Length: 230
Ligand code: GRF
Image (cartoon, rainbow, N blue to C red):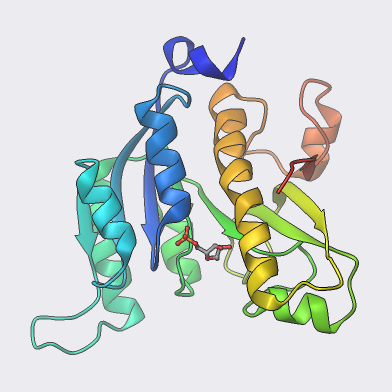
């Protein structure tokens, strides 16, 4: 089966996306959904920032949005209040999968455990190395030869859940943190839709951990490494 007719053969996966910034990864998913290249329906987008350009992208695509940044008094929302509102919003959208795509707040164990669907996160490093922030700068400073991005299951421990997929590149001598970020983002834009397609097709499972993936001959050992061009 080609990726082009994937959406006609598989029941669309209902996806909610959490964002904080530009939303270029969200845009890739919107484009793939609109082109019928991915069997997904983006049922809603939640942003913790009202100035996130991702919101414009979602609204342009007529996708419901929820901006959870400030309380009525104008004060910035604390994480507990954010999670209370996000939980009821997600429950109403009934997603099959929650995608954190450039979402920059740390979520509590309680929120993650009680979420209405499994959650995956896109992280700009080859996990388990370089969890957290400033991954590109840290990889360059450490003299790494390789860098890339990972998609992992979200657990209470930051950037520590099972890594599902990874894409890798070679760091060039002239790379700066900015140029490396741009190069890694090109990989992200391929890795995210491919990972979601694999999940939609059942070629990757979120219920299984790494070892049960290996026991099941039909599922690949994790992480699945995709060799993509930046
Ligand atoms: C991505 O580069 C991701 O690695 C990081 O945040 C960025 C989000 O980019 N966590 P965008 O908002 O999808 O453009």
